[in-house]
Image (tube, rainbow, N blue to C red; front, side, top):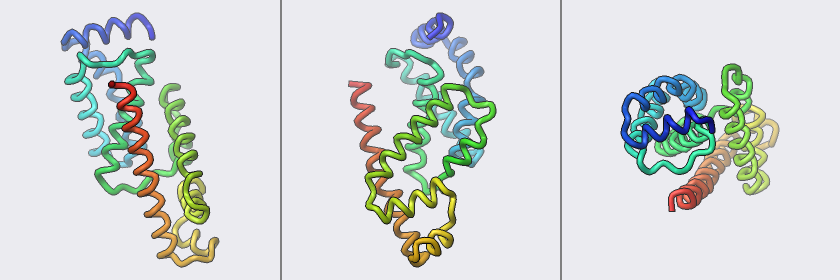
Length: 187
C-alpha cells in the first residue's frame, strides 16, 4: 500500500474527518458502481455503500492491518452486499453480465470478482448432481427456467424447486464461510 493511503488511514483512525471525506470522495463512485452492478437497483446500491461508509467511520479505530486499500474496500463492500442480499430476495445477476460490463472496473474489483466466482464455483460443486446441473445452466449459462426444463426433461416447477434449494444451500455455506473469515480476521 502506498504511503498516501497509509497516512490517510492513520488520520482516519485518529478521527480526522477531512481525511475521511477524501476517502469518501475518492471511493464513493467506484464502490457504488460495483454495488449497482451486483444489486441492479440504484436505491439499494446507494444504501449499501452509504451504510458501508458509516460502518467504516464507526469502526475506524478497529481497522485491521490493510495491505491494499482498494482490495480491502471492495472486499468489505462485497460482504455488506452479501449480507444485504441475504436479508432480501433479489434476482441474482449472472456472472457473465458482470464480466461483460467490466469497463471502468479497477484491477482490485476485477480480481475480487474472479475470486468470488471461483469461490462460488467451488461451492456449486458441492451440490447434488442434478441440482448442480440446473444451477449451472441458470447461473452460468443464463438459461431460463423453461429452457432448463426442456433441456433436462423436468417440469418447470421441479427446476424452480431445485434452483431455490440450491440458492438456500449455497447461501448457508457462504454465510458459514463468511462467519469463519470474520472470526479469523477479528479475533
